[in-house]
Image 1 (cartoon, rainbow, N blue to C red):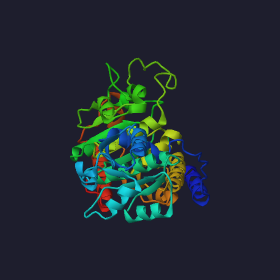
Image 2: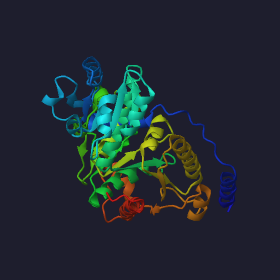
Image 3: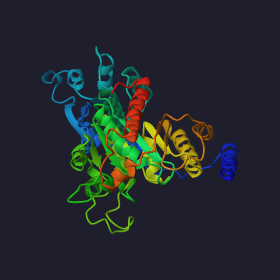
Image 4: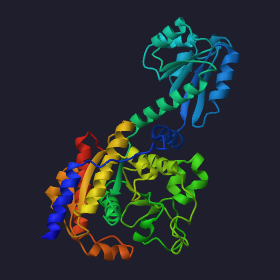
Length: 425
């Protein structure tokens, strides 16, 4: 009776006083990082250059041609005579992007049929030049050499948008615990297995580098096991092949990118073993994996740190795992505030799915928890003593157990939410 009174008192405090979150600016710059990762990981951008003045042409060609991920597939000038060349527009339309001077911009403007994105470059920006850019439907007009870096940035952004349109991107699902022991590790591992069971190509990424729980929970402490630590030396030139080579195949049909390899880590302090993994490396891995897999499940750190916020920026769906105890609800409220604050600032609004996981004795009802959080729970996972036993042995819970069936239902519901948003992947 006393416990119930205390519970109601704290519930009233939580409900009546919004929990403030002091959020520092994210160091990730997600749009730039993801864009660069997509460019390095995908096929090269096929660019065609048509600039009449030979000296100016070679100056632009030399600068742009050094850009990683950019391949010059056609080059047109006023020399040799045009009669000895293929028509400029015919060459240019075979590329992914067109880089033209005003003279060739006018030719593109009067061409028949669709053309790739056009970027106009000129040594002097005048009204006629701007008019030509408009008539050619250019993505932008850039004064050379003052705005050459802006030109390259614009080319990158255009190519990234085209790549995103050309191939479907897998869903990124971030699993976040409201507190330690809420069950995010169990949910993340079994959610990846459930997605694989539903026919998706699924990958699980352990972003909790301080603890690296998935290495032990999945029974991967023995032998030469790869992890994200192996990608640190190639972080500046990361490619899909690098990430694929670091993945481990689980017997349940999903792949795993571990935070720790497990090689001699058992007795090491969690913050003193292994190389330092940059926040941007995790984000780049997630971006590249989303291009290869249908479902990318991110197992997030336990605290609202920079790495957690970086993951929330790139997630399509956030699974917030909480119990029905007061401290779990307090942590869930703080997490919700952080997700909404960061997402609103970034212009990204991931779908938030609250999952109630019965790992402790319930202190409140589901209805009370939903009132405090201001969200209805998407699903609830029943208490199951087999979970702790299975994790202690480095195994997944057997498929016949209630907790496993609940997570399988959660995977189905997450898919339904995406389908309702128009995703058919």
